[in-house]
Image 1 (cartoon, rainbow, N blue to C red):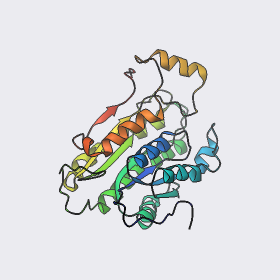
Image 2: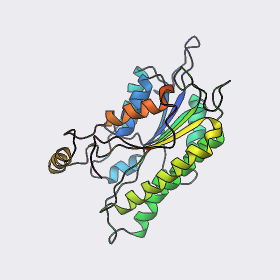
Image 3: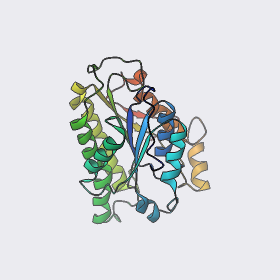
Image 4: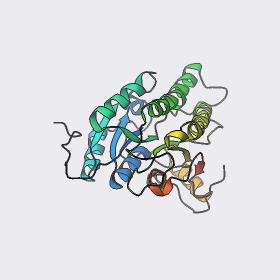
Length: 276
């Protein structure tokens, strides 16, 4: 038995399953969301892709997936860590197959993965442009599509029916976006397309009882900012600080809860009031 395959307690109430993409670093937004949902009673399947972190300036975090899995297990969650290259169009099917085999049907899908390499209108290469859209847009669409094809809801639940337990009554899709454009063309453009796909899901999957929302967390320092940038952003934010991964995690947790069921088809800014 591996570290993220634990026996379940037959006397314990069933925990719904959340599938979270982009959980490759312990200080990242994806990891914070995973911790928060685990603490709220969810089992967690998560994806990561170490080669992406290796080519970024922050580098790969050795043993991050196992370490994050241990944290989630300590919070009572069963876990499934799935390494997946989202540039491949077959990756979403494989991810769902593995998550379902190990944990059961997925109730909440949280898209926090990203390809993010700074480049502007004049210096973006075709290869970089295509890779951003493959990961941020196409993979997100295929994950949402796979979720919609497989979602069956809880036994006895009806579309839009209020519930009281964790994950009760309906499914959830939450995608993380960005409003970056200048100097970050392929990232911002591919995230803009992701917004439209997710908001379309709010309507096209409504008959399943699934809500779909987009969250823009604003500037969150997960190791990519320098001191000058941190200070400038904090000074330009009415609340006088940067966003934290926990800020985003709290909002995602609410949207995935029964209390968040009436929020649907929205692009929510959780950025301390920072102007675009």
